[in-house]
Length: 132
Length: 132
Image 1 (cartoon, helix red, strand yellow):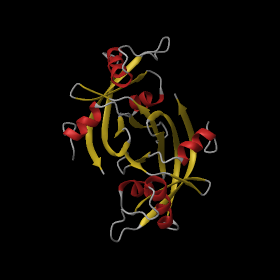
Image 2 (spheres, chains in turn green, yellow):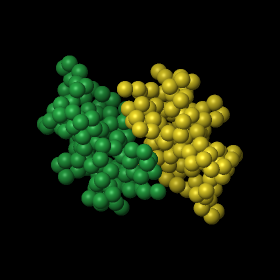
Image 3 (cartoon, helix red, strand yellow):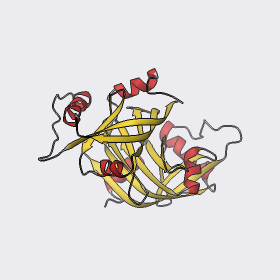
Image 4 (cartoon, rainbow over the protein chains, first blue to last red):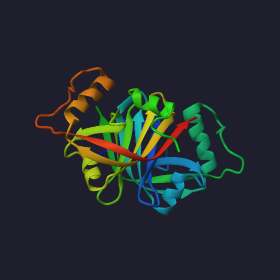
């Protein structure tokens, strides 16, 4: 099994490559969405607004798969299977970190009025690294 | 809800954009992988080798999510949730069609000795189109 500390995996996660997060809907079907991905707390962090589908799914069932592929080279990717725990602590600062990483702006510009951010800390159970 | 016939969705699926397929492992966790995606039979077709994880998962539980994002513009994507049925009929011809689409080669060059191809025909239950 690969690890988050492997250089190839780390590079994929450090660069502004987008991720696809997959979570379980209430009926057991799978929901997938594109998102920004960060490193921190010694693991992978993702961020959303309270009430959206994937964070709601994670709050009910913490299992997820997160796939991050190199932009322009889709068969170079990491799949991280595991669980995630949500926290609002640091979520506002963290979305600004992701904004800086992905769009070069110090402050996340897409916040909706009244939006509450939530950050999920991923505990990897299985890391699969593919480079073809 | 969007449809496979919507022009934006169709364009995403006609171009050689890679997909991320998510299926359910035996323990209920989610597996995600990158793959080629085709149109045919009036729907979306994907192709694998018998015995790999995602086709094995689909044979046990046909539910999937397939996300196809525009290459270089990840926040332009379609998520297709539904079920898939596998068939070996036409699977060998179909992997060549995908080879032509994605790498410009009339014959799929990565076949392993003894490999049996299988094609999955997707029945969409929910189509979500995102263009940000």
